[in-house]
Image (cartoon, rainbow, N blue to C red; front, side, top):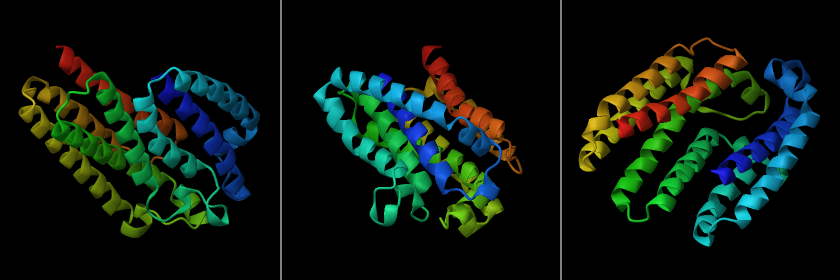
Length: 242
């Protein structure tokens, strides 16, 4: 968990510092104005996180380190403009949210695998797919919020292609598919007792996405919409312990 926390804080700090330099001045408002004001703080947080990351990397197993290398590479290329024409992976059309989902899905599955390497491959695969679907569904709302920013960067996204309403329908559909896949997994793995908790977690997620329509508050997205991911995990953990 230390590796995940420190690497997330480090890359988030770099991503924000680089990202703010690419946004047109007339679009710098809300959270971007705060980022610009406290950019020096982000450098400090990023530096501390990098030191912590080195510590945890040196204390982890080689097997887990090998597993993290491709995920870390994607994360670095997502934030740093070191590809041709100083592009980041997130600057390529349509792939931004899929990169986020693949990395977080891989990290989640990796944490499970480290704790139980005897887990059935099919179970691991379904868990990975479910988590990727869930993160994509949640992240679509962020792409709706960032329509103007992405347009200014000439980065094409799913909401630009489908339109806002169709994007929300896609988000609901993906959440339902994720719920069904998790229920199937529970029956397969003889864990049907936690299905009500999983349904509660997913219906809560659908509700939060639904009420995000028309919202532009950074506190809403960074707090409630991001927070529902943690709440979902907490509800499922409670179900497993009940």
